[in-house]
Length: 426
Image (cartoon, rainbow, N blue to C red; front, side, top):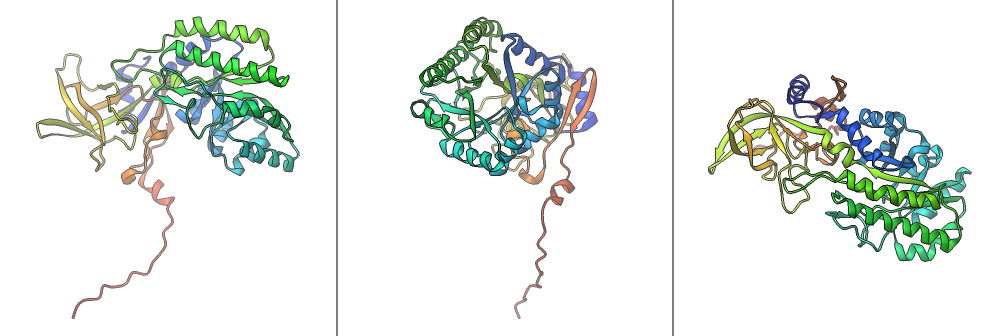
């Protein structure tokens, strides 16, 4: 962490809560640590899905990061942030026609094809537009990534084409008109903390690339090995060993590059770059005891940070949390930290120990830079999405305004039904 609690507290007080606070220097450090652990010829593509704020994308772009997008909006954000079409890839299982056409119009580096049906659609649009579509075929591999709590491949999913089927039919894909197949894309899992797991996954993908290239005697120019590097959220987890990662990945990529020097190697990352650099700041509104448990009621919960509240997890464990208003020598107590919603699941911290909490204190949920606002139901109770603040070079920048009631109401369309007076019983 490059910003201290005083800076976090200052930002929270100045811009209000709930709000997301980002440490710009930590973002850059995380990106550079990953980039330095890879050979120079490997390109890191930042995945906007984890946090698409245009200023954060711009900051990473200024340091050389490329961009991976999953929607038209993310693609336009990437462009606004300074990305060039040559450094954008677009993936996802449900691309709309207008999204495909915009990607073709821009001539982005690669549309990642998730199915044979999508390949035909892209071919037809490219023919209509008089262009050649640059694509990569996404494979759902037979290999399943160890160490990933959320496996994206090696089992039935909506992502990609089965490896065996794709390998058998790749010759047909190469014959589809108005299509230039740059190579393959595989994303096998996420939140991986074991360097050897990433290595084994990557080795499998590179071997698959080699197999297809030799079988069809073709020359590709791209291989996307995914990534999936995670961060520790819970007390029993340890960070990815970046030195071990480097010792495994550099020789692997260098060996591949020696055989395929003209192939662009892409590694995706989002959570690893942004995760540890973000904080959700919430203010304590009330403290109460209920059934012998002390509840701290705050102004931000599941609606702001569903991941911290345990949405989608069977075992709900606490994200790291701190009372940044407390003094260094304050005594610790056990609390249940809740958000503002009328939902029993709106709990940010269960049986969590914090320095003594008082009304108006500011609490921060750490490791919140990835999948914070983007995966949260911001419209629950119509609270709207929180503000986002970037702290960088000792300066604070408001990079997203908090949703106000007027902002949300103005997007709704009122049908003016005629109100009838009630009929009274005589």
